[in-house]
Length: 470
Ligand code: SAM
Image (cartoon, rainbow, N blue to C red; front, side, top):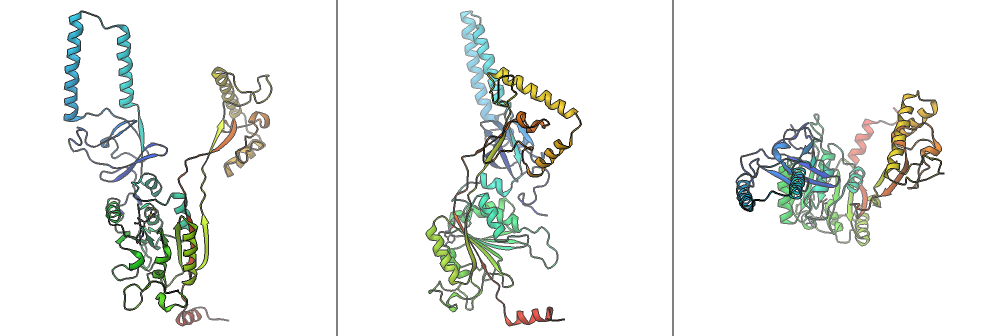
């Protein structure tokens, strides 16, 4: 069976496996869940995740269905906690003695304060919650320990699609960096249990920075991805892409390197010096006879990722000289839109003209109550043909109901003005706004294809297989 939680997380969380703890929408924490073993970091419960939303012992997150909400726990801090408790008890005892000596009743204000503090403490101890999610490349990209700039989801989704990374593909990647792209790539090429004659799908990854290489190696092992990603510690500008002297036979290549043009000569089908007009490109790959790292039976798709346009022009120029075709450049400009319905500002007329805002919270609540009552009435009535049409349209394209559409972030006319039969979730004006903190940059993506070489034997085989005129 597949041991990687990225590829087959199973229905529930597991011990000694990676889980993503979601603190808030964009605040994610990767955690390797551990079985409680008496004391750990001073906690009797074993390992504990401490957050601003409370404490979460691993034991409360183990063997639960993915997506579960986990409530914060009051943790027993073991010996450390016992010492703290003893000190607190001593202090309480000293204070009690002082009060009885003075023969004073604690004041009501003091009791209130104590009560409020106790409530506050109880809230802090147990009211917070987190969700526990299975690891995916997207969540890993958001939560991974950064060692370098990384490729973000909007870019790698597009890249993997354009370089045709599919189940069974072999992909070359350099450099590995923080492994963000690697995780997305391995999921794209993973082929489960391939049938006889089908390829398994593999990523050959290269990184020349010793510490990054070591960290990445450990992560791949912790994530159960070792068999699917082969990581090599190498400078690919001088050493190329063969692994143990053999060709990975790659179908697709992704280069996230400062100088992709220095790696490109190693990604030829023939020794670069033997090709016309290569401008003295780098030497071969240390073999007596040239071995190409590319799949000889397929056209190979490449993407290079570079932040500066100067890098792009040098890369494109090298690609042209080395026989790559269909070269184009793309920049991903990702924009997230937050869409919501402004129900409080809804115009219910109230004999005060159009677009009147509620005067205060009471009026807003009264209007909402009225909207809900109307919605219930509407729901009780049989739906007319027009209403069905509205719903169908909305279901199909996520569009607002007829007469209630908004374009380019403009406020749509309120439902009151335009429609008589509206579902509760369609009430209010549709509002969209751009979210400012978008993580994608980013770089220019250069795509190209190196066609399969067509030999006399290929021609003969094709002619035999598809005889002309028969
Ligand atoms: N794509 C990665 C990710 O998504 O996490 C980030 C890659 S990072 C921007 C570039 C990496 O390339 C660095 O880790 C760097 O050490 C590595 N690198 C640079 N030149 C290299 C070379 N000649 N051979 C191998 N790796 C190289």
